[in-house]
Image (tube, rainbow, N blue to C red; front, side):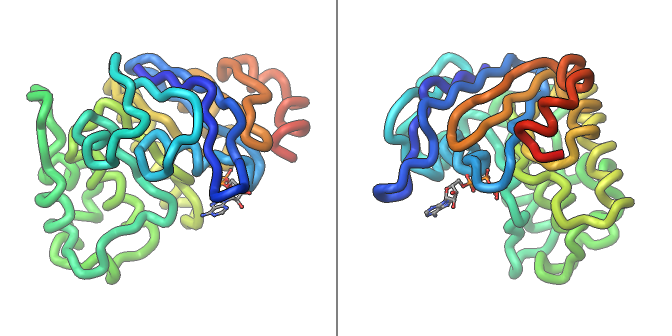
Length: 233
Ligand SMILES: Nc1ncnc2c1ncn2[C@@H]1O[C@H](COP(=O)(O)OP(=O)(O)OP(=O)(O)O)[C@@H](O)[C@H]1O
């Protein structure tokens, strides 16, 4: 479903991705791992059309999408839960969900605002609150809900559980496991490798803009040398 091949991205004269490869099938959950500053966010932003691509190709659902505008990529079925949530401070929870709701593929059991409220009852209690009146956990739930109501083929999360209290973090992991079990394709960046091993099928580790390791959850779980070498854990 997603095939990133030889991706190169630069910020001005400073190149940060050097021929990065990443691929996943529909229905899979995959992760992108690596220490800080290695290029994970840049990779996700390039996939979503938020960062210009200098070289390489990005294919999604059979089409070459590198060079497309972010809104076209969104309509093609990729939804991003961005780092820092980026909820709109002046829209209510309900307005976020209503404004982003779309079922372009005619999915039978589409994500609607009502279904998001079932997934996150806390959001339902906050439905009339503005984005800037929410806790970090509520904002993350809203950012996930906002992505889900676009009924994406691929849900991408950048730092899914960053800065959240342990209990809220657990709630986010439980949500992602439920989505995964329901067949949602997910690409996620996070620091909690143990949680990601329980969630994802396979993992790609990058270092200085290049892939240094790729493998299944079972292999990553068994080889803590990889954690130490590439993730400093
Ligand atoms: N807007 C920018 N302008 C210039 N350099 C940038 C910009 N954004 C990121 N970089 C640099 O690109 C490199 C990759 O950053 P990126 O945010 O993709 O890494 P990351 O792996 O997601 O790290 P983190 O976990 O810290 O977010 C870093 O060296 C970073 O300093």
